[in-house]
Length: 226
Image (cartoon, rainbow, N blue to C red; front, top):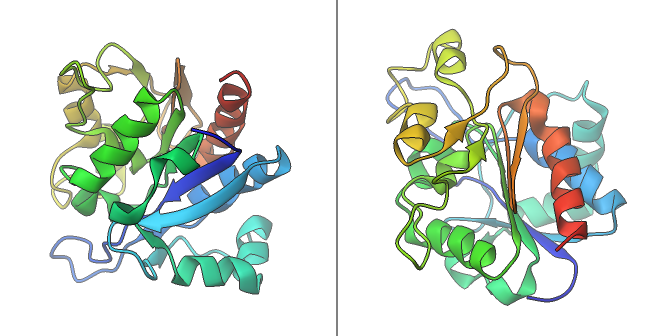
C-alpha cells in the first residue's frame, strides 16, 4: 500500500426493488467527502461492481458541490468509466469509501469483489469508510481470522427509523442497521437525518447524507495517522 490515492466505490444497481422506481449512488455522498479529501491532497479513482457508468441518484444542482461536479467534464468522464471492482489493484490505495444510495443494498452485500476490497484494504493497514447505505459493503465481510470486520466496532449507518421514514423498510432486502448489529457492530446513531459519524480505529462510517462531509473529514484525519 503506497501513495495517496483513495478508491470511491459506487453501486451499479439502478432498480429500487419492484417499485418501478430508479435508484443508484447518492451523488452528495460522493461529492462532499471527495471535496474534503481532494482538499487534503488525496487523489482518487472511481469503481463499481460492474464498471462503466453507474446509475446516479440525488442529483440536486442547488448543492454547489454537486453542480461543480456535474459541470466538470473530467469528473463526468470518470463516472462514465468506473473501474470494475474485480480489476482494482488494492496496492494502489490507502483507503476506500463506499458511497451510499439505496442501490448498494442489492449489489454490495455478499459481493466477493466488494468484500475483497473492504477486507483487503483494512488488513493492509488502510482506512475503510462508508456512508448512509454504503455500510452495506461491510455486511458479511470477514477478516482473515474469521471475525466480521464490524464486530466490536462502533458503526453509523442508515437507521431502521430512517428506512421507515422514507417508506422503504419493506422494499430493501433487509434492514441495514439490524444486520450490522447482528454481526457485532455497536451502532451509533443520531435522531433521524441528523449527522452522525463513527470512527473505530481505521473504520469510518456515517449515518446518512448529512454525515457525508463529516465522513470525509474523519477519513482524512484517519489517513493522516496511518
